[in-house]
Image (tube, rainbow, N blue to C red; front, side):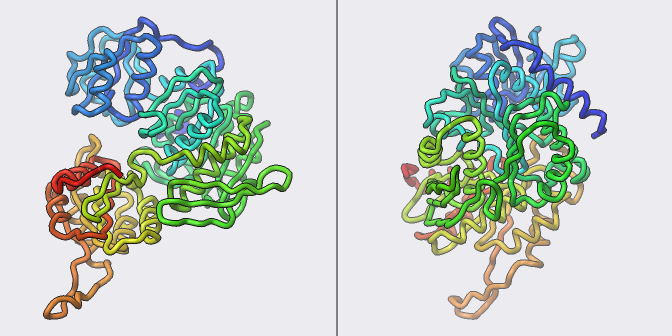
Length: 502
């Protein structure tokens, strides 16, 4: 990425302040990749504004079916003929530049907007709370949504995951606030001009876009400082995050003009968690509030990282004028976002959980959380996501997966529309993991021998078969990854004719 691109994105970002609330009523909008979690939310919001929505995706899913029921015309497969004279075409960073629909739209001179630019337009006319960071964006936004609902502030929301409280991934409200994630993965967060900005953490992740930590810091800094006249009123940062403390915060203090900078964390910050208690799938902690008071906050989701997310949501809500009783109530009402340590079901004492973790840091967090739970044996069915990520973080994946606190089932890489990279595949990753994993002796065998701690499963069907073969009552199964690995857990339950009513 060229650094000059930042200025172009900042110009787009500032357009928000030069227009009234946009209304797409009667306009024909085509969305490429409409079934994606973020693109589908935009499509729903556009339909509610009266837009004539069409789109395409590679496969059918629940979002596509729901959008069709709402009147959207959606084709399966990306074909040039899907472009039928729309006023606007919206696409996400997951869509390659040689996509036939994009190419035809360019040839015909149709206006093209990246997903974040469309979302930025949809936020116009409302106060914006935008949450970014390498990990925790969706959960933090979900927690903030729960707080706003508890406070009866009627927000508009767009999430990168499904939230039970919304019965989906979006909400149209009449309140003054719009709550959303700002995606750092491709720099498109610079389309947003938030009133309150939250950065949960910073870690070099999207290596198909960023080449260095310094480049990522540069983008975060541009997001938070704007053009010196339209920067956020409040910037909220995680005190515990290394890159935030070492690189972002020092520059931010020099370059920000008037924003108030607030911090939170488990080890420090203006709002700090103390007396942390994690019991099973629940957690609680104390925080110091205004005028020296302390409050007990309770969560229905486990893990220190979720406590950190809750702190971020609480600070943002407080800055939006929400009182602490509502903050406490909202966090207690929050039951999690789909695919974030989501309990999928149980069968004869076997519990199946699904998690979106696809980065070594996220995987390590899930392992740490699982270690606190009560089970006999842990099975981790992991699906790497994208060839570029797997290639650049190969040694990190090997290290964390070799230390898995249970039996690893490694399946093939989910491409996410990327072309394969020679030598980058799960079989080779598995071989490297085997050389470094802990050696465990099976004392139950007639002859003492090394016990298998990991298995290569080339597809989801083989994952299900291996789970059927090995899992016993009292065991915990975690399907993990950003692709379609969750289907292995669902298929396992279906094959066992187990109840998903938990």
